[in-house]
Image (cartoon, rainbow, N blue to C red; front, side):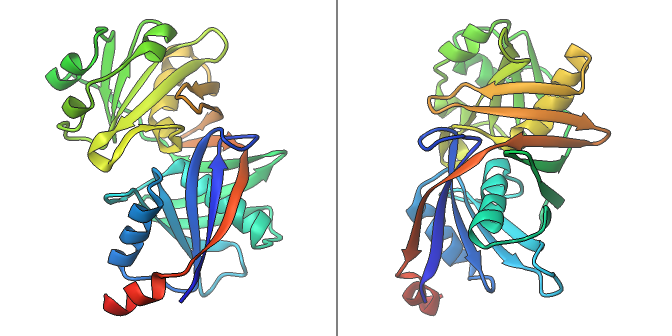
Length: 271
């Protein structure tokens, strides 16, 4: 059984920027162990698998996301990349598609030259800065919040850019990962994201992190429309809107490659 594989750079207007995701369209679900093996072999921060709903007219899909070491409940950039594949490679004629996921219903629609994702907002709550975070960073943060991840706020954009965290200490934390963030002169805010316990030392652009960052910065800055940049080595620009209890996250995407997974059948037969 051969599987088509796409590698898409999400939150990028040209190749070699943004966050690469591997995307596997399926006719039916593979065994969990096989999907995890494929994600491990791809060795990208996320591999997404989706299956069209049997009651769909081509615009409703079920989606799952895997890091190299585990399945996760939500991933923004791989959702954006999956929508790109559905619209541009599979020929979906609709302007909007819906994904059913472990985090509920997610929609993606065309918006000019961008794709806009509609995700549930996940407002973080203030917390004491864990000792592991204090020890992992050379600079003392001005605030720490807790949600799906720890949100660590620094005084200056340069603090975020210069950070070289002790990843071993971050891997001991109880949450998925750590987002560090600060106000920006060019953007409303900047951020970086680390999830070593999930096999991701630093994620280039983390769409799901903005479900937490946008409610926080919206409250701090007193605005609901925000521009941001994840200032990883590859980097990626994100346009966000807070609409009630939802976050609209927009970005571009571009295809890097189309390939075929030739060895999936033999592995599936052993499962």
